[in-house]
Length: 193
Picture (cartoon, rainbow, N blue to C red):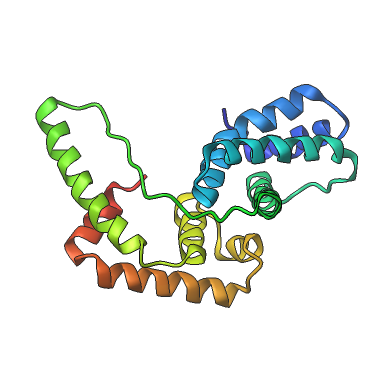
């Protein structure tokens, strides 16, 4: 379920007034993206789910004091990041981003086999290259390219300057280029979700 931008403000205002249906709509529209981000952020399924749940409990408890965000998804991702960091501090866990995972489309068995082999090879190259990135570089790459956040949103979510985010992503891409054969990197980019 996705919420049209024109409806987002109306639904958010309803949620702020205690409308449980509006709250459920926000939850349903953003749970999947938040869980995926949380899992990539901390590599722990239960912590990711717990973080999303805790975030929504906090939202409900503070609903009357919240402003209307320019982008609900961006606001929720930034809030989830803070929630997960707080939870990690409490649990004293060190988290790292998991390796990339791609699902295959349904095609003929021959095409599926060829695509599966190509993806396995690309994932192998990417895994090796991603292992050379820092945790912050992995997080910035995920927010920018998987969640399609702007550089400004990534900088705010990660508590960095925009220039720092540009530098972080630029260095990460350079490391990936150096550690992944050019042809394979271009093929990888074409099959990424």
